[in-house]
Amino acid sequence: MKRASQKKYDPPESPRSVGWTKSQTVRLIPPGAPWRLESGGVLRAVEVEYETYGELNRARNNAVLVLHALSGDAHVAGWDAEAEARGRRWRLRKPGWWDEVVGPGKALDTRRFFVICSNVLGGCYGTTGPRSINPETGRRYGLSFPRVTVGDWVRLQARLLDHLGIERLHGVVGGSLGGQQAIEWAMAFPDRVERCIVLAASPRLSAQGLAFNAVGRFAIMNDPKFAGGDYEDGQGPNAGLAAARMLAHITYLSEKGMHHKFGRRLRNGRRADFGFGVEFEVESYLEYQGRTFVERFDADAYLYITRAMDYYDCAESWGGGDLARACRRVRAKILVVSFSSDWLYPPAHCKEFALQLCRAGKPVSYVEVPSTLGHDAFLVETEAVGGLISSFFAPGASEVSA
Image (cartoon, rainbow, N blue to C red; front, side):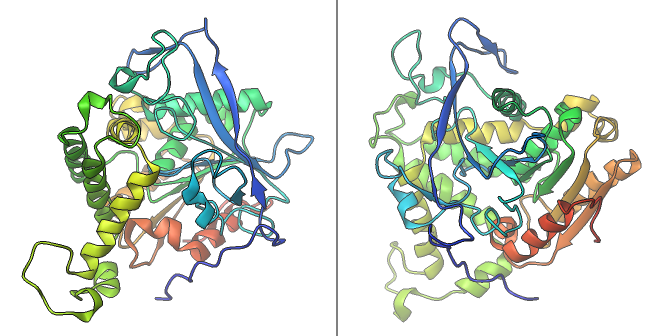
């Protein structure tokens, strides 16, 4: 198959870039109006950080909500104008994580759409989470922060839309954990979503996926510097978090992709030194992934987000365990996209979701994109993904061809 194109970043002055961006923060759960979560926990103050691109039209019917994955954030496109000031220096090196898809003339054309993305509850990028200050104690929450779910995230996103004066979305789109949020939107708020795109995601994580998340959390919580989740900035369980990221990153790739990229090559073509350091190219790559992840992510947030990922099961939430029954709630037109080498959310699981929607009489299209790039293909195969998004969101479009 044709390989994914090399990423070419548009500079902020490019007519195809959304340019310099600034995040916004809003307090959606004010003090004195406690918000009860699905876990039974209560939050008495919640702030949400988000970004928007494009303009909301007079009819307020051109909004598209983009939903980020596990380690993603609200900075979808463009160049962060406040990266240095907000301690997010890693953003200086490149634009938003989906910059090739969002912008003028791109698949999510900001000349036509008002694109929104917010950071999830329990994360570490500005929305209230375990590293936030608990207003009742004046100290960071740490592990006293209540457990959160995908359902909580979506309900909070709905409050953000209320704040922005948006009653109905032209569409929601997300990949991986963002795809599960898109599914939840279609089921929790069926009257507020016109179109829904689910990329590399299915109604629940497999037992194998649960197992990988469990090992990642084990690595973090058994790091001597974890300190019960109450560590100081820069002094936390960095080794455990790096190991968790390294393990997770393996699930984002595929055997073919790893073989093509690394094979069994030793670093710099040198011979084996029979030690236990980093010798193979694949080891070097994973070590880099772990090291750079620690620079931008928080260990407590990783625990909360992966647990929310584990808990999500839309059949259980909306169909009493019956996926077909849950699918009857959907009113949006849905596009489900899988990737042939994805073994975190395998094509068979994605296809089963599409089949259940079809049996429920819902307008659904299913596409399996051939790729050797594994789960990460939803981020990397931007030409194929962008084409599908453009077709599905085209004026008057109701379906795309498989």
